[in-house]
Length: 233
Image 1 (tube, rainbow, N blue to C red):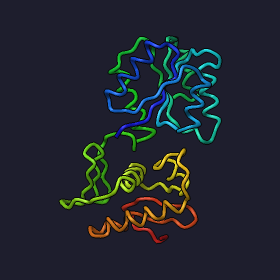
Image 2 (image 1 turned 135 degrees about the vertical axis):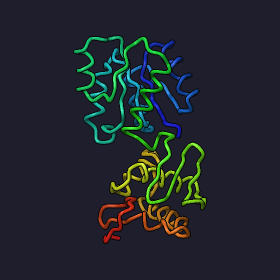
Image 3 (image 1 turned 90 degrees about the horizontal axis):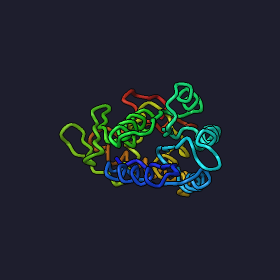
Image 4 (image 1 turned 30 degrees about the vertical axis):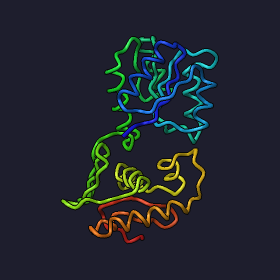
């Protein structure tokens, strides 16, 4: 599944190379040449991952990383630092600032794509193409197919994204607000009750195969998917 990736890089040639590589890999990529432009992009739409150059004009990449990690809205967005600084102390500083990985220039596009995939798998598994399975229900994001044994399950695009997110975060309870941010996007303004409508549609689609019970309501908290029966529904 395509991830939305923000590239914060002030060197046009490197920026263009990364943009082309990410688009070939199937991701949706946008670029910013400095921290101020990056913040504008982030305020408009939260990306799945940020590629952040250490040396930027004005606010440095390290300062921007600290700022993002100190804000509730952005603190969980994965960050990969891009830098020509290869000293171990610099790597430690980047990681201690909150970066999830550290890529030293020059780097190959293949290495960068591999690092991105690894970080997304850890921090945003719903943005990867990895198939997921729970309680006999299988979902393959690369083919956009869902099955319960040999029986195909047909879902609309929103219900598919909702199920994919829940399955890649199995057993975790997510509030309506969190689901809106992760499935609809935090820049989309819809009522929280919209989540309830799509949960009902999702359960109805899964009912014929008996998998509707996987989608559990946790009173006062939100929703989760679990193969373990729950007394709180």
